[in-house]
Image 1: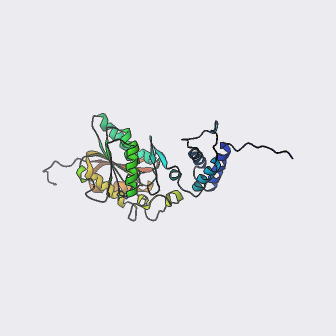
Image 2: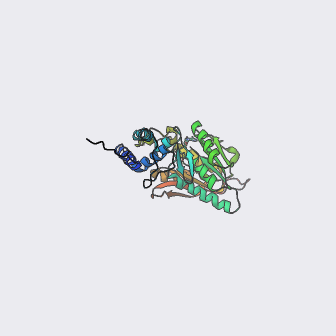
Image 3: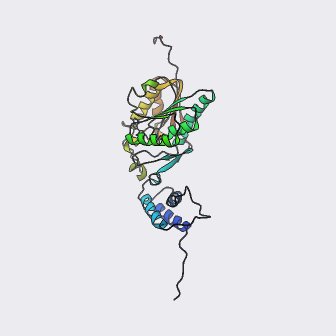
Length: 305
Ligand SMILES: C[S@@+](CC[C@H](N)C(=O)[O-])C[C@H]1O[C@@H](n2cnc3c(N)ncnc32)[C@H](O)[C@@H]1O
């Protein structure tokens, strides 16, 4: 019998195998994740299968370990330690909410408003409540360099990570504070001066436990569940804080669940502080964002009728 020398499997074969394993495990984007894990194992930002790079010793074992973690539904972003949000790469860690692509459109609304103010020569003050990794805050800070951004979160882990992300990719005008949006004195020194208040708060009701293991088992409860029977306790606190912090004419932008548009608009209307209260769709047409403008306060000295 003659020995047949077979070539070692190439990158494509490894990626095909990893894709099959991840698909079998119910991962939503198995090919994408297999490619990302292969690139990570090679220390590259991404891989091309047409002209694949040479595979170093130990690659197969390294990739197998990564695929096994993903097969167990550990979030891809936790394995890679990073995610891309708009134009920046953010550090991501277990214990802090992983920024989602749909929040990029929420950030866009805040960026558009801040950019319009900056174009008129202002240095817009933007507050991002419930900042998590600092995703929205960093996006506004980097895309509207004239802005001054203050980011707030209750969680120690989130504040630490947002500060790390701000230090790595943000400007000196980005400040990260620890605080609770339910605190009526939160950022009191900024009362009535904020041009844009943007937030992606926790908003899931207690009985709507997410099905995806990546979310249910890995995003912190503090980041998911908004409190109260409808999940809107923290979002309502964001709206109340916005009524206090925003300057006359300032803009509130807040993400919520698809079914919460009406309740979010009602909460904004109930403060009596907003006009032009609307719900905007995300890129897939789902109603996901509350937008409202702060009405002008009566001149000092005027007493209510
Ligand atoms: C859904 S995550 C969003 C994080 C980030 N804005 C994003 O879009 O990636 C909600 C965040 O709100 C924070 N949070 C929850 N309750 C809070 C509160 N009462 N005050 C301030 N932050 C809070 C959580 O720690 C978490 O980081």
